[in-house]
Image 1 (spheres, rainbow, N blue to C red):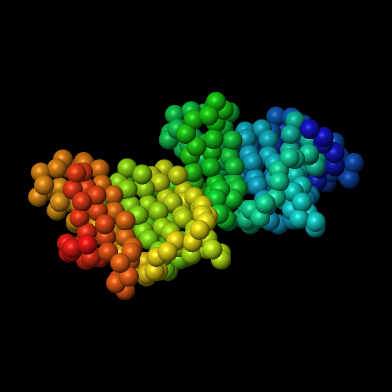
Image 2: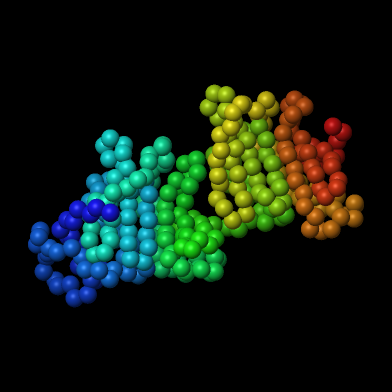
Length: 305
């Protein structure tokens, strides 16, 4: 790591968070680098340092943000659209080397994300993953332009994802109306029309829709992981339909009805694919529930073929 130290101009408030014994006089332009011992799990400390690093980097938008208990690093794009990193490490602020590559990832306004209490986020993540070993918070384009905040550990445990407001990403149960509804909503994003919607009670929800010329985009929401995006070739040969035609309550009603009538266990796995493969001008729902296979209209009425 190569750090080019710079004089550190901190407000009295940030000094109070990071240093012991800061005076009230303004620091001179030749002030020494910050002493070691910063604790970015303290409320306000990480947010203040991120803003200072962005200011030093000359950008208000970030490509990535990484925070540990004792370090902060931000990566931005320079005027040539190349990644440039600035960091606080070992008591010094400066530009650092980075091997990060820019391949059209989304940049973001860090102010969207609640970094007011990184220690609280670490504790919440520990409660979900069962580990607090070398915790690190990252904000980055997770997949397909979806910028997410997450906490991971070393050794690796379950990565815990957070919404922008600092709340934990909801864990979805796809054997319930609410879980299916939330999964479809997340997978759709801003899309109105799709080729298909698929739900698997043990896997999650996927939607397929037209991408760039000759491609199909699939967005998938699983139980504990945010939406991932994949682009496939060739284009799917299906008509599109309005996603609002699909009612999650009707899906679960069919599942419950078939489980009861066929004497299947209440927790038997199931899946459904919803599309207009027969070019009828309206989608149908193609179910597999335990050993039973059936087709219904979007209202849940069984049909032939």
